[in-house]
Length: 91
Image 1 (cartoon, rainbow, N blue to C red):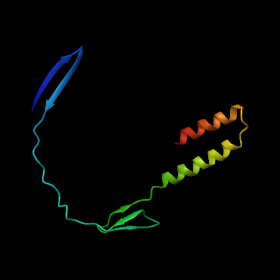
Image 2: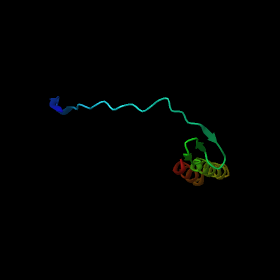
Image 3: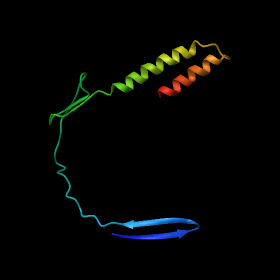
Image 4: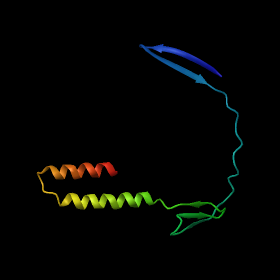
């Protein structure tokens, strides 16, 4: 490991060099089957499961609700501005 400190135009810079041993690479010939479903997003052939990302759908539904509420506000009043602020907080 080595390092160097340098000052240039009133700013200080440090450079650090580190020697790292090469790590053996994993076997790239391994394959995995994927089954997409309704209850779990994906089931892998090695037994692993990935859950559905429901937070996206929840945020999408909340945004649609806020947009419907915003379209009913009277233009020029303070209420549309409040509705826009609520929509920005969910995204």
